[in-house]
Image (cartoon, rainbow, N blue to C red; front, side, top):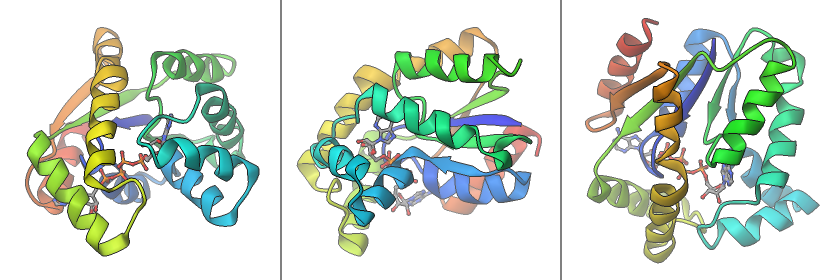
Length: 187
Ligand code: B4P
């Protein structure tokens, strides 16, 4: 199963993707987590990514696409994968298609987690208190939501037109959302 999980910041992508990937026996690949690991290690990729992430902007497509291409070429992705937070731009959608097409493959299903704006702001401000992530300040959260609305929300139409989009209500407790996801995916 080659899955993509989408949704605004704070929709619960990372939270849900972890358990779902384990259950499906496929790797959970979060571009945000990979960037943050590079930031922590102080790699050149991390130093570049941090400038964008701290401002709530997307890391440039060229950088992100190369990183995902490298990750998907690893052996553990052969049975499938769950991509969390990628693709986020139209160019990334095209790149992902190309990466898979060369092996005769395609995205099987795209899941969109839907939530209301007030709820995601509340969740992210709570995470800010608990974890102190640099991009969870109120100003940066608002910018991330704007960037999502402009650049990423329209992508769901691409997957919808292919007939592979599944919309799942992301409101409620983590367990409630997980149960809905499993039903929607028939997992
Ligand atoms: P991400 O790491 O993807 O961050 P995110 O959108 O905030 O989602 P995340 O997965 O962390 O949060 P979740 O909704 O699970 O991206 C961070 C940055 O990296 C981007 O802004 C960008 O700069 C860069 N980046 C990443 N991918 C990129 C790409 N493809 N192209 C360019 N740039 C890219 O959870 C949020 C909080 O809600 C958590 O605290 C969680 O515990 C809580 N929560 C989840 N579900 C809940 C529920 N049901 N009820 C209550 N709380 C819940």
